[in-house]
Amino acid sequence: MAEQQISKDFKAWVEDSDMPAGKKKVVLAALKLFSAQGFDGTSTQEIAKESGMSQATIFKYFKTKEDLLYFIIAPLMENIIPVYVEDFQNSLQAHGNNLKSFIHYVVRSRYQFIADNREVASIMLSEILTKDKVKAKFMELISERGAGIFKVFTDLVENSDEVRSDIKPESIIRLIVSQVLVYFLQNYKIFGVKSDMQVNEDLDEIEKLIISAIEK
Image 1 (cartoon, rainbow, N blue to C red):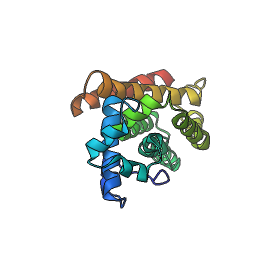
Image 2 (image 1 turned 45 degrees about the horizontal axis):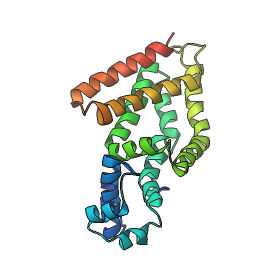
Image 3 (image 1 turned 90 degrees about the vertical axis):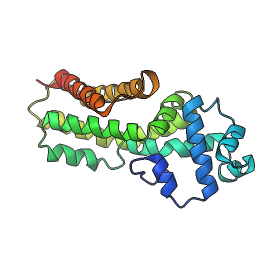
């Protein structure tokens, strides 16, 4: 599964997949419980009860609870760092190195992806600091695809006449990532979900903040 690109919504992907019905129920039950009460706070007995499956069925498909966790969050990690760096490259070219258009695309596309998969994202952000396997996979993805993403932002700095010459590509990446992730956590873990209109207005403000920090 981790090698396949999920489309928009993890739960929809599970429902539409050809995995056995029992496995689907286990995965969706674990998703719900891990998101609500944390990985460590969820037992396989609770997953069995929520899914209507036996613990034996859980361990038929997943050797350990950690394997079940990884099965859920791996696709998000595969896609939050674009599987195809060309997505960002094509967007940059399509927008003619226009700073505002490109930042708008990056902020909206990454936020929407995380929001569409908010339960998985919440689990990933909670576990990435405490689970060595999760952390190792994330660092592996950064290593594999980081250079491609870095080049996209290097091209932006070098080819756009709107970006400050003293700004570093990695600084732009950190700024975008921090703003998008903090806003996601505010919406789904701290203050509660806002209306689409409010989210749109807030993302507009985030884009303006990023642009003001890096433009000439």
